[in-house]
Length: 335
View: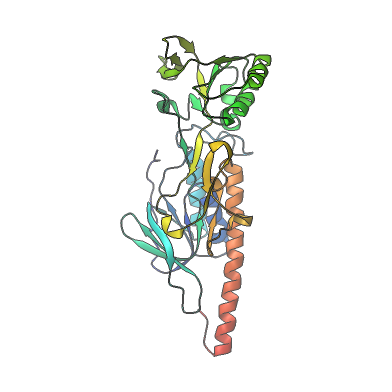
């Protein structure tokens, strides 16, 4: 889901210190830190944040209850205040380029409209995509009556009749978290295995288990969820549905970087592999936010972006000093 288009900055013509791919919390906070360190930085933002359907962001002090679009608008303004640029565009490709004359790394990022920008370092903050279960009527309520995170949306759906649509083993723990929020909880197994011990634990918490296959989700007169229609024709009234989605890091346009990826346990997701401060096995490329930490909320993603940016700035400072020293020894002037 794309947000409303906003005024885009011009794409820099000269090589920049860093290109940030992704304009969410991690990307914008990373760009902010770099810009405040007087680094030339450009954010390439496709305008498709994961939380676009949500009315408000929760669970982060001070900003709790703020609409996601407002947070992003303020973030872009703050990056620009320090000289950073935010370009509304999609990345078609990103790949290593020939190094500079002094051996410093270079990357070329090409946009969908064939414009290109050269950067010394890259920060990948593309976020993730939630893979929803293929249940008729389910996706249209995503982010409103259909939720995934008890910490992001739990308070808002407290005491409602909630149904959990199982997607795999991770749904069991997911259900226990939602049980904290309501007395009226139904677990739809959807063909997933549920052992006797788990059924006993659910029964002890008054969680009803429905093994009949789910046919579809039906809409209420107010536009929200009315309930779940089962394959045998029975109907289970629910006002909220919860699901543990499979989370997939967004990789569009990044194949040329050959960033290593890894699967998470219980088939819960696939992410970019990263080390300390978002470092990767590809020199000059860092990752931050949901692209590598699939469970991170806004605060954690923003913090990760800041940490990666500080590491990038440190590496660039060392590279600048190496170049200056080499120029001094050769009798030339460093750029």
